[in-house]
Amino acid sequence: MRRIARGEKPWKAHRTHAYQRAALALGSHAAVVVRITILNVALVALALIAIRYPETAWVPLAAGAGLTITLLWYFERIAAAKAA
Image (tube, rainbow, N blue to C red; front, side, top):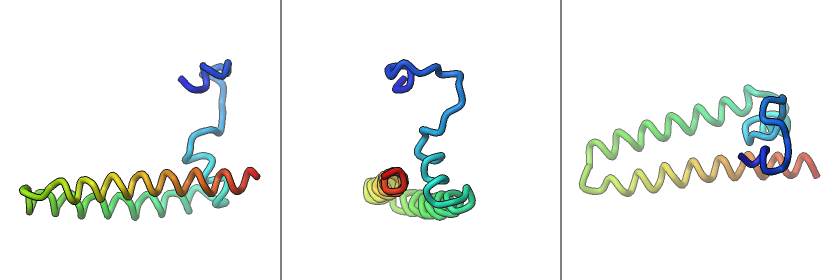
């Protein structure tokens, strides 16, 4: 929707996704995949904790949301730094 709002054609190739910008900034897709894999392992661990302790499931949920937001922020930050 953001690309359409800017008048770009949505069917044309682009490199505006955070993942693509991070891969360009880090120098490889592998570097991004490693970071995403680490996040996924952490999210699985948090899910298992939430299952084991359902009465406090909001804690790992909040931690998972925080980790995910932090990684996305990191990708945007390094992409912006590389573009500058």
